[in-house]
Length: 344
Image 1 (tube, rainbow, N blue to C red):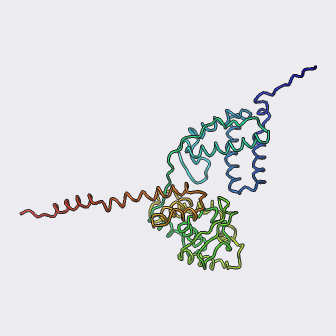
Image 2 (image 1 turned 90 degrees about the horizontal axis):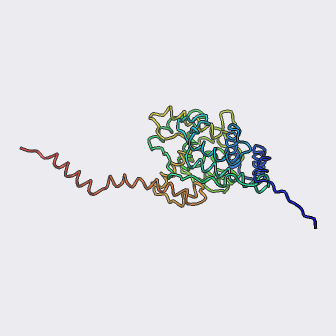
Image 3 (image 1 turned 45 degrees about the vertical axis):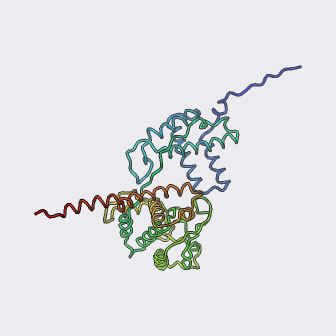
């Protein structure tokens, strides 16, 4: 009987033929076919584009294992934070563990997909460990900073009124900037004081109803009247540029920084749309709002995200204790009494 010898490919034979740039393009196209959200596709594209640029610049194409390991090291110890952002300037070296871990997860998903398509034999990111993340904190505006920002736009002009209305809406609802700038007139029901965040514009692809206050309704009515958007204009974007085109979140974020410079006081917190979201969440809880209701308003998938705000909001208990502490009141009363005694 004739014996056959089977030649086994070496473990990295496919890897040498692996075209990283082309495969990333195929991966992104596949995500589009899966009807993933534009935000998700953009996030994958940005993360993988940054990764492949590093691999090309360091001549690591074709050596997938070293490329992933060296990239994680670069992000952790060498990358200057915000060095690729047009407006935020920083000298901090090394990004947060959370950012690094997100990159690792994106790269793992990509290579798992490539393995499933038989484009590569193994996932080079499987042996890269997730970093330990510090307890997440976030910056939040003070009430005085919010008031100063709200007073900065010149509301007699359309752009000033528009930006004021957007700030009011963020303070009142905690909407994500991408959700807010995607709103159309048909999403607003001013009679019932609510906004529908449609599934196609929501981050988690789930629709939700967000209530709004009477004050916000009045501001929105003023804005709608200014640009002559009626209830029948259901498909019209609500927030527009001065030329009547759709107003995007990146442009609004830049305008916020300009308003911060004009503010009557110095704004110490990071001036960004998401800081408004943090402010709404914490103030909602401190004013007696229920955590479960907050989860629904913010559009969180589960309570773990909302829990961050619950923990932060509870920090004000310390301030309340300082004001109401029995021992403080007794000691202070004694000290005040001694100071008021007149010796003859």
